[in-house]
Length: 370
Image 1 (tube, rainbow, N blue to C red):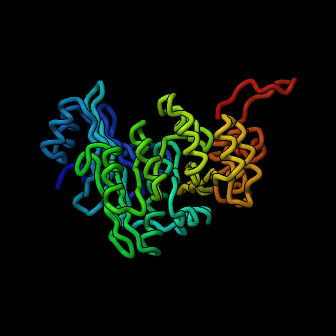
Image 2: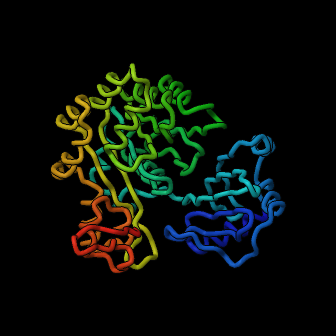
């Protein structure tokens, strides 16, 4: 058994989402969004290096020694599955182990808006799940794939870095391919997938212009493409895609987005009122004729108003969703306040008044800690 498994076992017993190992500090656990040290000595550089090298293959060790970060899946001696990133920094090695639950969650278990189930039924087009790192994008996509796997007869090709949730084929054939192991790039994976009779292509991350371009092509040619972007809102997602591609393709990209982008789901994780868990809260864009026109006429800044008025279509702004969750007592209002865009609307719910800005006699905010 690798020595690092002891830290992973402790983390799982505590219910953490991530185990952090770095030189000069004790091992740390991510507990409901907060990073907490465990009772252990500070890790020395040679000690941590020996821990890390025990779980790497020879090829991974060579890549790490060449100065590259390493991403891979790891199964501990106790059967826990983790997504791992190993890196080098000024003081030595560092590693983050993110726990991947053994069972793929359902959309119902995640308590996602019902319209996400409808997104799975699209015959073609692109559906994007976005958000910052660690907001549960992969979990939401895994639940969507699981829904398809249990309800339809399809060929699903999932391109991941690395493979996280394992999907045994049920009604669907689910083919999971890993970057660096089965394919050299996401773009190459999408290109190959289109020759493999897919119904659904999942792209782990639209991280570069070539991948975005290939995913757009797949969505335009009769496939449902699911993917992620590290963007923090529906409007920012559309702008990011337009800006990512060369200027001479700008009009073509806007045309694609107006016609083939079906939905954008942006999510954050907010602590529950008891502080013992976190709940995903969603901003949702459903593309319609009005939004398509705003995209093609360079008026994406007006899309927010469409989200506010499109609730009957399943759309919602992040602030709307946060406010609904507070009123339903599903989330901690202090944590929700931190993620709100128009924070003034949330002042009256905040219990920790240190988060609220100071206001002078003229009604101007002078300081904002949140």
